[in-house]
Amino acid sequence: MFLASIFDDAPYEAEGSVETTTTTSGKVVGPAPPEPRGRTRLVGLDNLGSTCYMNSLLQTMYYTPALRPALLSLAPSDLGAAHYDDRSAKSRDIPLELQRLFANMMRLDQSSMRTDKLTSSFGWKGRQEVVQHDVQELNRILFAAIEQSLASTVGKNMIRDIYCGSMVDLLKCLSCNRTRERVETFYDLTLPISGVPDLQTSLARYTELELLSGDNKYRCEGCQALVDAEKGLRVKSLPPVLTLSINRFSYDYERGQRVKDDRAFAFPMVLDMKPYCTADATGADELYHLYSVVIHRGQAHGGHYHAYIRDQYNEGVWEKPPADNKN
Image 1: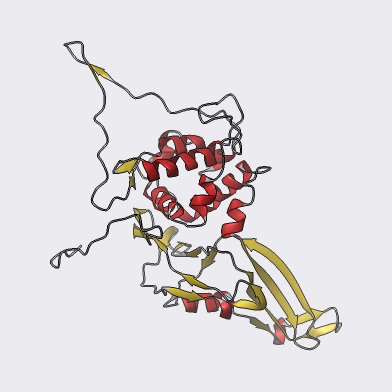
Image 2: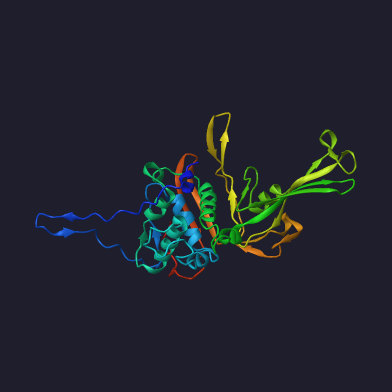
C-alpha cells in the first residue's frame, strides 16, 4: 500500500528552513518572493514530481462546501496541540497540515502553494512524491487517516457525516418474501464502465437484481426448499457529498498488463439517485448537483490528472476565453 506510512507512529518531521546563498560581496540572498495570484484570483498547488493526482483531489476537497468549514472550525486544542508551533504536545499531523494548507490557500496572495508539509505528515520520503498513484486509493486512505487522527475529538465524525453512505446486500425469497440483508458503509462507489454509455446506465447495472433460478436456486430457511430468489445491491442511505469512481483501469490477464478503458462516458449535471435505492432509503429524495470531475489523461501506466471544479464559493474571477482560443 503506497500510503501505508500515513498510519505509522513515526515522529513528525517539520519542513526544513529555506536555503540562502551568500554572494562574493557578502550579501545574503534569499529566494524570490512568490508570484501573486493571477487574474482568476484562484490558487494552484505545486507539482512535487508526480503529485498531480493528489493536487486534483486536494483542490476538490478544498472546494467542498461541507468539508472546508468543518476542517477550519477545528481549534488547535481539538488537534492535540496548544498552538500551531507546539510540537511537544501530541498533534494530529495530517488534519493539522491539511487545515494549514487550506487556510493559506484562502489568505495568502500567491499563485500556487507547496504541499511539502502535508506530504511530510503522510510520512512520504524520496520516490513517493515522484511516482504517480491512483487518486481513488489516495482518497480512501487519506479519509481513513483523517478519521483515525481525529478519533476521540470533536471532529471524529467529520468525514463520516459528509461522505459516508450505506449499501444493502439483498437476498429475497420469491416464494415467502423472506429477506436477508447485510448493510455495509461506503465512502465512494466504484462503478463499471465496460459496455455502458453513461452514469445512469452504470448505476442501474451496479444495482440490478439478479434472478437466482433453475440450477442456481436459493435454499430458503423459511421454505426449507430450493426456491427462486433475487439477489443484488441497493443504496440504503445517501451522504451529503456522493463520490463516484469510474472503474477505467483493470488488469488484462491475457496480455499480462494493466489496461485503461478510454471510451467516452457521459454524466449528468443533476443526478437523481432514487431509482438505485431501497424504498426507505435515507436521502433518496435529494438531487445531486455535479461540482467536481477528476480526470486522468493518458494511458494505464502514466499520464496526468486534472480537475474541473465548480466554484461553489464564487472566489474566482471568470471571463470568457477569446473566440479563437482552441484550448
